[in-house]
Image (cartoon, rainbow, N blue to C red; front, side):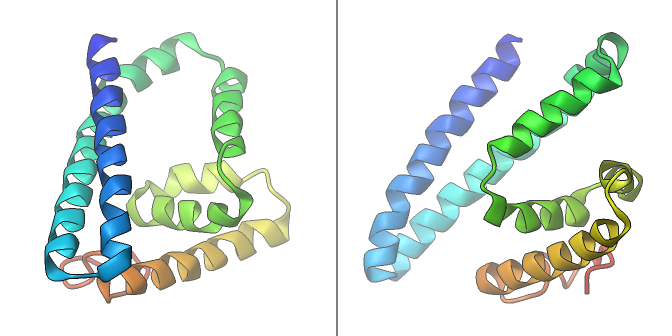
Amino acid sequence: MLLMEAHHESISAQLDEVIRLRTPYAAAAGETAKLELAGACERLNSLLIEHLGAEEQRLLPLAEQHMTSEEWGKIGEEGLGTLPKRMMPLAFGMMQYEGDPETLAEMIGGAPFPIRHIVPALARRTFRKCAWRVHGTETPDAKTRNHGLA
């Protein structure tokens, strides 16, 4: 658990750095501010990838062994409860981009028929719009892989 706690502390500190650097960037959008913010975002991304990989490798097998599906579902619901509703389509779009299609289908499998069809389409569109604003492409790495979103 010490590794996970250390990751959380590093991620929190790097997120604080991203938030600190976005103010000068928003004020002037100069090249130096842009490069500093981009570097901070890259470092945050690296920390998140490392942490999420460690969670998948170390924590998810333990959860599978020791938690019921109801307990696991409650954790997911609580996590979604902290996300502002307006951000849910983007979050689901991000999951569609990186996630396992079977897991995503399971996530919304119990939803009413219209939701199962509207949410994925809305999420893809929301993710594409965000990717265009951030990367200038429909996906962050559209030139190297396609994930079925383009």
